[in-house]
Amino acid sequence: MASGAERARILIVDDEQGARDALEIILEDEYEVECAEGGEEALARLRTHFFDLVLLDLTMPEMDGIEALGHIKDYDESIDVIIVSGADSARKAASAMKSGAYDYITKPYEAEDILTTVERAMKKRSLEKEVRFLRSEMALQFGNSQIIGYSSAMQAVFEIIRKVAQTDASVLITGESGTGKELVARAIHSRSRRAQKPFVAINCAAIPPELMESELFGHEKGAFTGAVNRTSGKFEFANSGTVFLDEISTMKLELQAKLLRVLQELEFTRVGSNTSIKVDVRIVAATNSRLDEMVREGRFRGDLFFRLNVIPIDLPSLRNRKGDVRLLANYFLDKFNQRFNKKIKGFTPASLAILESYPWPGNIRELENLVERLVVLRSDGSAIDEKDMPFDFLLREESCEEASDGVCRDVGLLQARQAFERQYILRALDRHRWNQSNTARDLGIHRNTLMQKMKSLNIYEATEKDHR
Image (cartoon, rainbow, N blue to C red; front, side, top):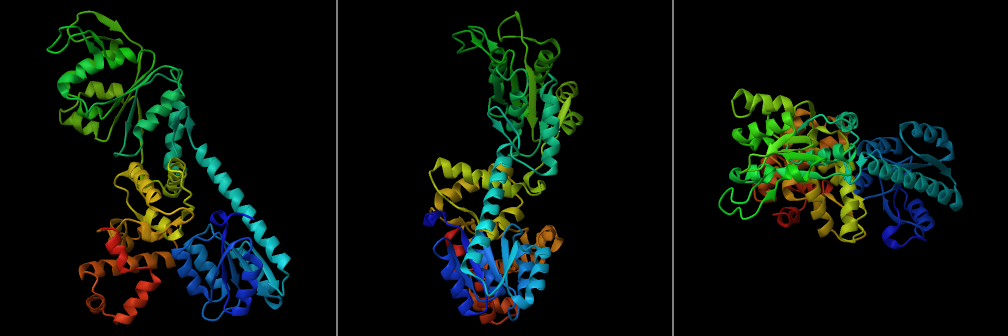
């Protein structure tokens, strides 16, 4: 039997107390088991807790099993559901599998039947996790560089990397800050014939303009005040390898001319010297600015732009990488679990919904930093939940506009409605400093109704206090 921290979690949904008790007795030795009396309660549990499997009764008042199954799959398609039904409803139970159920069991059942079916579902889920892990590990791995992504936008980037890596063509990588431009540069180098030679990264924005020429090309002794020795520059050190010029847009025009000469003649001179030094380097540049616009404005040399822009790679922002947020979040979770020797079990569907709806202005870097923070603060053996998210993730200026504009159109209707209601109520509570009477009056509902809504949507005042 697995240890408590590693046991799979099962939710039993049945309106009959006896049926719930019977299933719980059968399963509790091997699994963590919780129970719900109906579909609405089950959905509320799924919003706040992580479950591997749901055992769902087919015949229930208010919301029957078929309807509940639809809502569960709308909320999180990855959750496996086993339908439990009477023998007279076997045909209906079988048809439920077309709606996404994993399997069905008819009453009366033997304990062995339940355990066998559940074990089979768990093995399937385990294999799926293993496949997802292996896919994420092999998404794009070149040497020490790994880029994770399965969106169509990233697949197009991967294809360009594969084609350009074996050439010596100059590459210009564009994209917002935090999209992984240096990772792409390292991937190109790692797959090239220069892979065993140096990869030298230079952040042009971090080096003072008066020192940049010496940093790139080196200097002779006495070339300027403080130059007490001859020093080799980055280009000389990177000979036969790759030079990565990050934030190339910040380079001064005078130095741009000297960089152009290196690209054209494959030679340079140290500061304070008249002797040319031959060099064999590949140039990969990156920027989050529009160099073509800077060229039109006279702030960047057109001839250098065309030399750098032989192969353009435009990295998509994280908000435009459909499906990659979940993949990256789990990748970073594994990474920081190992780094901090933690055993955080994953993300609840509610927390993943928040991550996937957030616009990520800081892109992958922001997501990585957030997951690191969540892993450090979360207790072992539990999953990261909605209440663990920073308050500004739950209440953003654009949230209500996003919901009304249809940005949530890719999730189920129930989930989209709940997300909108939660954001709307949170905003009203924030306006009234969490005074429930004033908030209810503002919303045009009774205070008891507001309290019920807050409970069902997992809103409580500690949310505000904990994250500010």
